[in-house]
Length: 184
Image (cartoon, rainbow, N blue to C red; front, side, top):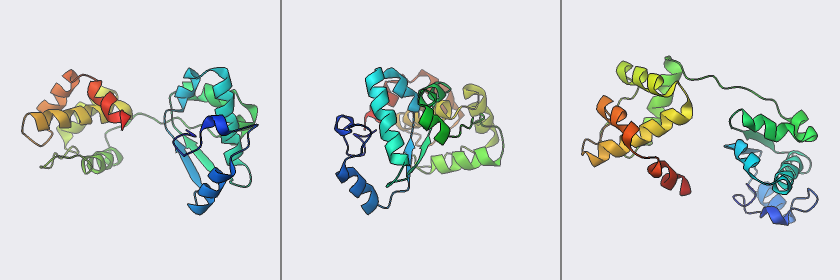
C-alpha cells in the first residue's frame, strides 16, 4: 500500500512515516485511506506484515490521524487482530450478500453506467437480477466479475449490451481477463 501512495514500505522505519508522505497527505487534505483485499497481507512474510501494520498505526495517529477503511475476506480480521493496537482502532463489520431489493438494483444501474457498452443493458431487470444473485450467491466480487465478463462477451459478439445470454456465457470466459484488468 505504501508504494501505491508513493512511499516505499522499506522507507518506513520504526513506524515513522517519511516527511514527504506526511506533507503529501496534508497538501491533498486526505482524511481517509481505503484498502481493498486487506487479507492479502497474510501472504507477506512476518517482517513485511509488521512494517505494514506499523505504517497503518502511524497513519491513524497524530499528526495525520487518518481513518482507514479496509475491505477483505474473513481472513482480513486475522491480519488486523495480530496487532493489538490496530485491533483496538478498528471495528469489524460483516457485509451480507446482496439480496433482491432496490439497493441491489441501484448498485447494478450505477455499475452499468461505467461499462464501455454502446447500448443500455438494464441490469436491474428482474430476470437479470435473479440470474446474478443465483449465479454468484450475492457476493459482490462474483457479481462484478460476471458483469465484466458478460460485457466482454457482448462486445465480442457485437451486441454491445448485456443480455441474459451474455451473463450465462460469461461463466466460460477465463479469469485471464480479470487478471489483466487488475494489472492496470
